Length: 114
Length: 117
Image (cartoon, each protein chain N blue to C red):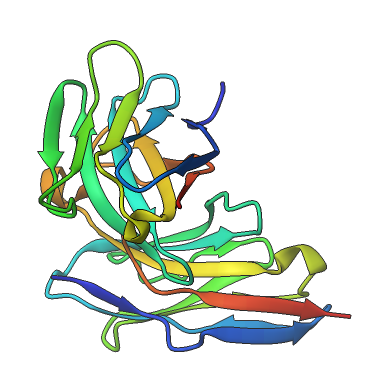
């Protein structure tokens, strides 16, 4: 049973480009959470999705950021027109249900904006 | 909103010794979960130990144990017989028991643990 898979592991984008980060949850998990970790900081919640639904996006910046979790395929975190301040590690976690006792994390995508 | 505070940015322990990492939190809820996660240089977030607030007994996982003081809102992690592989960032995290919008984890800023020979 493969764990949470995130790709790419490293992503370099120039300012103004779009970044797409992918997350495939563990088999049987239908709940996905995205977190952002700025350098030397803890993880900050961004968005919580179930298949085809955004449940909680209270941590998402109001502009340029969006997330989806389609019926088929991985969850996507999209950042449009990236800026240097978007450079961070982005983590995805999944759980089999909302009332979980453990969320399983992927290894993260490190985004560098140059 | 809940907050989690880790007041020790860095800690150091000698191999085979014991170290305690501190965590305090603020919440108005009576039931919740608390977690300690380990993040080695690989960046993988690894669950170390979990505590349900309604359980008075402190959780234990092999060399890892917690001191959960609900009234004081304190949740410290004790690592016994420290090993070189324990060197990592350690994050304390809080989660409500409710589903839906409360399913997210709230993390502290982390403690970097060094293990010396």
